[in-house]
Image (tube, rainbow, N blue to C red; front, side, top):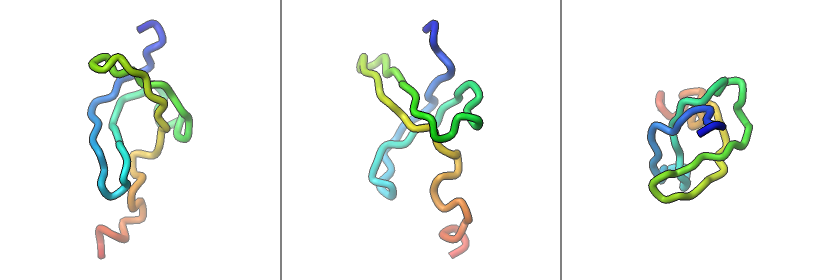
Length: 67
């Protein structure tokens, strides 16, 4: 708890990306895109390394959305 810099709000599996993705709130998050941080899962008692990415990481130009 002394090193907490934010928290994960939700996680789910993305079949399009074929990997797990999550949303969270992190101190200075936009400044830290590309950084690897450690996330702790208190339910499973596990730690995970996660990569911080842009909140718009899939189809940022909107080509898929506009067909």
